[in-house]
Image (cartoon, rainbow, N blue to C red; front, top):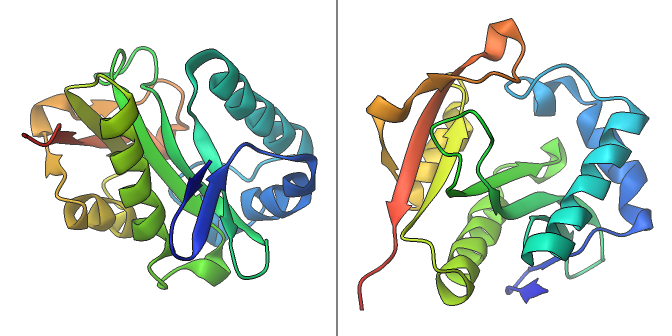
Amino acid sequence: MIETERLILRRWEDRDRAPFHAMGGDPEVMEHLGPLLTRAETDAAIDRQNGLIDSHGHCFWAVERREDGALIGFCGLKPGAEDTPIEGDIEIGWRLARDHWGKGYAREAAQASLDWGWANLDAPAIAAITTPGNVRSWGLMERLSMVRVPEDDFDHPKAPDWLRAHITYRIARPQG
């Protein structure tokens, strides 16, 4: 578990399933991520993340708002996607419910995830990917001091055709 001033990043729980499904069914949340998700797909995603915690000790953790215990999204670290330029790397990622955009939660959770990664993993760098049109996401990458690596841009093999193009950012392990 990771705690920040306003958030808790933690293992997924059964109480997270309904709010996470609502996020997966929101066209604005899913605009740059793919088709709307079914309940079975969101349940499977939660189960995959908990499986990553069990096997690797980290995942895209559930992000809970401390003041009321509400699930507001996810953020964290996982192994980079297979058949992409970040395979074998650590990937940082996030997704928040639309009501929680623009409040600094994504940056707070992402910075906490990076800090955890540097303290607990032996990775020389951490990568992030998104679609070129997802300005909010790559803007956060830049605010986190991540750097675009155009030579690692790629067509994501698991994305639908209209979202296949992906851009890659990386941040090197801090020195000292």
